Structures are given as structure tokens and as C-alpha cells.
Length: 244
Image 1 (cartoon, rainbow, N blue to C red):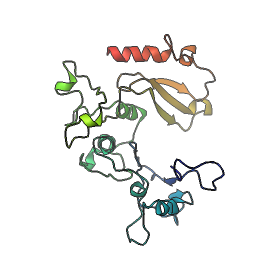
Image 2: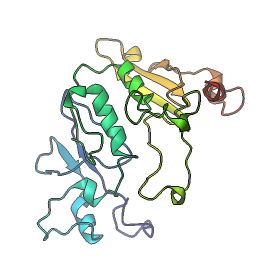
Image 3: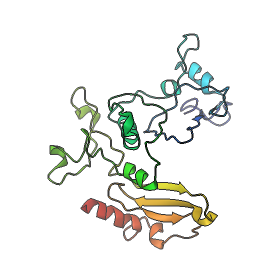
Image 4: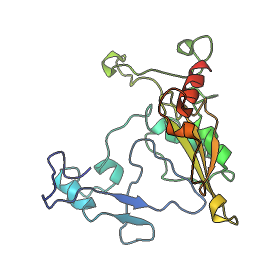
């Protein structure tokens, strides 16, 4: 973001606009390629923080009129119009997996900023979420004619001009075939620093990868992780993903 494509060093304009909202203890949030923060209260710095131009930039660009009486919401002023099939559906899916008791509507355009999970969330739960393609729901990408005889959840992008009228294309799953890598980072108390923080790392599409534990105290990785070519770790994961 910022003043726009014509901004250059020395213009005396801020180069960015940002906002942060604290996630309440015991809750989780999810952002699927769009702003999730709505109304903010900068008089409550324990829960909200923002750049000094958060309001002025929106007013200058015509995104918000303080005289209109309309409440300032970041996802409206600084975000784009987004469609359920691409953004909101993934947010619904994550919340539905960790808090099914909420019985959230998958067709809503906006969801709560954060929710309390029905049960404590583990690293394995996050891996399951990262591997998800709506299995067992009405949006299951492994079902239907397009999934083929082997139930393939992959969908390849086409020009939006080719979509039927009123359609916004395929469902956008959490796990995507063109993913380069995914991670799950865990901070564990009561352990020595060098093993207390742990990253589970998986190359290629999450729904076909296996996650490798990498401790924060590691100073060197296998040489295959340094190779971005045939014979490297990514090449092996990518090839096997295509075969699954």
C-alpha cells in the first residue's frame, strides 16, 4: 500500500500503512488473502495499533469520509471487494474445523475476527488445516466429474473471461497444488531454547507433503535443501506430489 505507484523516495509521504489487532488469549484468527481487521480503537493500545496515516490516507484517497457518519472499518477502507469462493470460504473452513460448535454459515461474506476453538489446537491440527481441500463438505474438491476417476482435488486456473455468468471460478482450497512450501511453527515452554521452538516444514502441496521437524538450534540443513534443481529436496517432493 502507500500513496500509490508514483511514490518515490524523497516525496515526504509515508511508504506504508499498517494496522494490528491483538488476538485474544485462547482464540485463533485466520486471514485468507484479505484484510480481516474491522473497526479499531487506537485509544486502546493494548488491543489496537496502527500507522499514523491509517485515517488520513483513507480520507485522501476517497475511501472514507469522516463526515458520512459511517464507521471506519479497515477491511472496507483499505481492502478490496472479495468473493466467498476465494477468501471467505477458507476462513469459514478453518473456523469450522477448529470450532464446529459455532455452526458458521459457509456463505457469509464476513466472519468474526477470531474465535475460541472447541479444543486445544495442536500442530497436527494445523497440518490438517493446511492440507484441507474441503473434504466431506459440499465444496469437496475431490468429488464430482472435474475431480476425475481418482478424486484429484487440483483445479487449474482459467481466464475469468471463460467463467460462466455469475460464477467466480473454482473453489479456492486451503491446500493448493502450486504451493512451494508450508510450515507449522511451534513454541514450547519448559524446554531448552535450542529445541523449544520447532518448525515443521513441508515442500510442495500441503495435501501431499510430509512435514519435517527442524529445531531452532539447527545451524545447518541437509545439502539437498540448498538445491533448487533436480536432485534437490524440492524436486523429490514435487515429483512425488505429481504421482500421488
